[in-house]
Length: 296
Image (tube, rainbow, N blue to C red; front, side, top):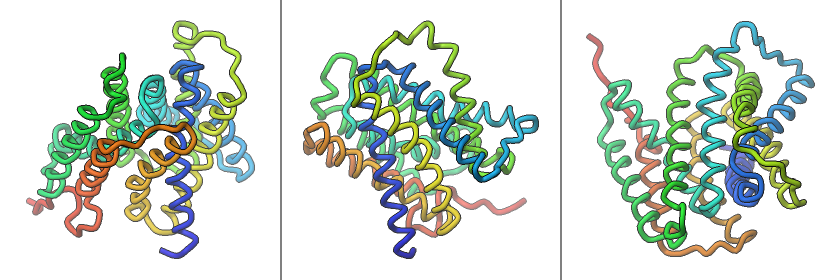
């Protein structure tokens, strides 16, 4: 990995880590539904401008069903659930919960697709459970009213990211920018019908408005472009290391900007979750995630 790719990797981790900071600022003021809609909508508009400038069409007639499925699993449902959780949980805790997505992906593959897990991946699943237990059992933030539902929502968001990973592997091969662009428009359309029932009129303050722009343009627009550039430059597997760096920046931004305390349970629980994620993804191991089966 050259210096330019390393800088992009760190920048991407810092940007995605900041998404939990922005959610924590905006969710209590806007509510989860309006925040999720604005996040997807702002990102869709930004990516539409990029696609127009680069002359990259969506080809909706052929791929609209794919965009709807990907938009639901990878954007609409996780955005709603994380926005709900952000009303209660700290940015630090949200970023660590997000790191369980590869663990959920492994579990979905083992139970749904009947794939045999490697020993390292099974150990990673166990570590992930222990890490979440440490966070839930010892973090003071989990004692406040509504924390249990918020944690369940955060884990649910990571679970849908895990399902989306398996769907993307079996989906038609579509240009990455079109995938991001089309799925964001799909998420915007899917969330929109729930606005009259759950959203309430609000005049956002300047920090809330900036948080919405940050999470829409930077965390859901620019971040995709950085990620796709990384995959093109260094490959998908090395780019996956961003998963391990996001909680570092999530905890850092929460502490520096919002003054969130960093207790021993956050550090130890977070380290256990990230370690479990590394084992599940087969990071640094030639064996990878699944046991190889002989043909026939």
